[in-house]
Picture 1: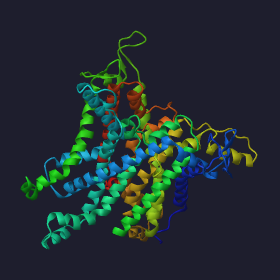
Picture 2: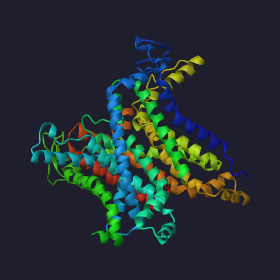
Picture 3: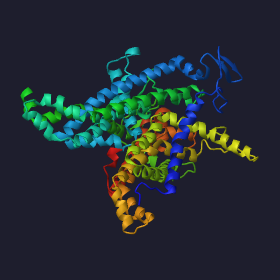
Picture 4: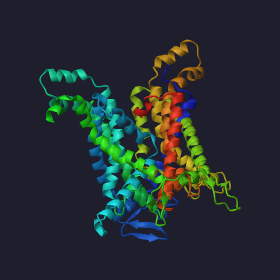
Length: 293
Length: 307
């Protein structure tokens, strides 16, 4: 019997599920090139290049040709701001949570200390409760805290504390740490301590051993933790939604706002750009990781 | 101090964990406690919180009313219980549907030649890397009355000369269910795959050598060995579905109110953070109870970690 043989039923359902996963993505990409402004039906590609001309809701001609909506997107100031916010939040929270989470993983895997059980339980909570519960909690905290501070320090106008980029960033750090810790711990678990002992026997102190032996060998885990934190931050809607303030909207928040009003193929162009960028990032991280293994 | 840092291992551990504890206490434990405190308070006319100690918000959630239309002093308004049971049944249906779709796929990948497995897994993750909101938007485009699915069916019907009235699919329970399954399906596929992949191929051969037919092998060997993956996947799907409000908001058109929508409304529209806090804590308690009993009954695999 060939162990790789699978029944036709399994193969058919596999094909169907892949179709289910990909049909929406294909539609998203296709409609980014739609000549129809209302974007309900696909009314063909924009074929002519030249000064923009719109006839009854259809783009007949555009300086960018078929890529009309991508050019519109690039000119959209709100999108540019939202993209900048999204990336700022993602980079800052990824770097911070990766460092803090890695330290926590080392502490939990290698050391025993007071509050260890408490730390482990509190790191599990964000994974097993619905995101909205944490989002609401942080919103309540900041709104109560800021009201209190604004009143006692009698701050007014621009100096008032409000929700914004800062609150979003610290919230993203908080929900990313547990995931980074989880991934790095898994890597530390399979790490042979004898290598560290050998390094110490050969005269290296703890710090040199950490930099030259421990860190390089857990690096793949740290990198996948960072990648996870980065994608979690980019993808997050719920916690951002409750902790963001005026002028600090991210791309998901911006798109959500659009979906309740009018949607042009710009949103599809944005999706196409988004998935392309993420794919490139993931591809390079995977390459980097497989080289280090 | 420096000497203590060099020699005391338990002190070193405490130093390493302290930034994490700072974040977890400041942005998880204190917020949850504050939510609890506020849920006992009441709402001021301007939407701020009056601290106090009353169970009014929880009584309101349970549906018991002391002011009734028909003059009685006590009656039952089941609206919040309905919202809760709607969320529970949607989460249940989503989970079952996800298991049914994920299992064959995970099985297919686990039995594929080793070098192809990573490619198949990668293909599952690619749609996940589009944004959550964007995936909901894709389903809005597909399900609209003049959307892609109706257009394709209409075109096919036209080919064979049939008259076709477009289906009303968006803003229904079904739309919310499909959207939820689409959002969370990979979280079911990955843990099931992890547990199936651990089964040695020689076990299948042994089972066949001993005369078991493929179906019997599946029922007596494969299925029991993959239960930890199904359990992990169930938690990873059930919990987020219980708390998500965007899918029902955009695909259910606000007619389908789930617990998540109730909480969001209380904070942003009705401006009653005290009642919203009570609802949020109820949601948390409920999901913790369900997952606790579920994992106690079926055991807990390491699949939830590797997913």
